[in-house]
Image (cartoon, rainbow, N blue to C red; front, side, top):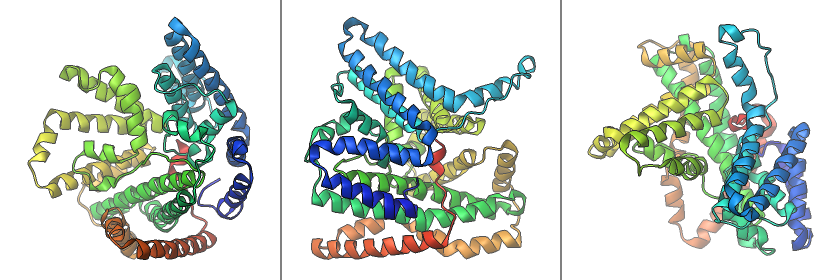
Length: 460
């Protein structure tokens, strides 16, 4: 069930909110777990049992790790292995089998096709962070399995994050009075901001990208870069919009989730970009992979190795396909170059140079991310970096969408939000209320009139 669907907006969410606030506080976590399972089962009924299995395994795992004494490390390794095994079977078994079939002795292996459970990468990483934090004594194991189940399956961020660590919401889960009118109001506004990003910006930009990417040979360099810009902004508004909606919904139920984006397209280096993009995932890999490997405290060769490992895993986390492996390696190379010398060079250049360098690197990188077919990817990259004229159809498409692209580019910058926050409080609150109503009306009209409503991060 998409947040940007009429079923969710006008049936599921109002019903859940009404029932949630009618219930006594002590029953709300249990009700949230039920609502989470209904939400997940709406699109993935066959995988509700997998979700419940993951909840049970990690609930038992947390209790075992906390009370295993000297065997705590063994218990942690065993339950992390179970999590990775489930993730590996459902997400990577087909990819591994297809790769092995490329080897002549194994060419006869049967193909493996297992449907990918939506959001499995996100809730598996949440489960793993919980186990590791219990092992590190950063949080206590949850005693109530219903409360723990509500944390793992919390529908606002179940499908596509942000990745919420248990220790960050531990107190709120235990607080029967975590909700407030102010939280609800701010959450509703944030939800509508995210919905507007998704419906009014990401969806039409996605339509332009679909049109331009279909035939790279007809694009020319200008058309190919326009397509790359369209996809870059589509992905940003798609995912940051979903994150805003998730954080807004969390606030409506009394939870404060971590911020997931901080104007990444204003970054001056690629390293800075990844401190601003999908911050919950970047922080997860930093705290649970990069630092345990030694981080930047090691000799330079080992530090560079750590970076390469993290980005290989980051690429694979995003998808079981070779284009994601290449995408991870691409960023590993860029980040290693910045650590070696490029970062210092960029520090001494005007900021506009750093921003232009970062935008070009990121836009080119998103093509590795977007195009899984290697032949299609080569053709599109060739169009980007080979001089050539766009066809009339491609040029007309770009011109037709140019006002939208300019508006989207402005929305990627903090200037609008900064100016709005400078308004006096009472006019600002009144303006926010009016804009929220307008956003809901416009988004509803767009959803009713247009069936194109994809969500890119569902496949992860």
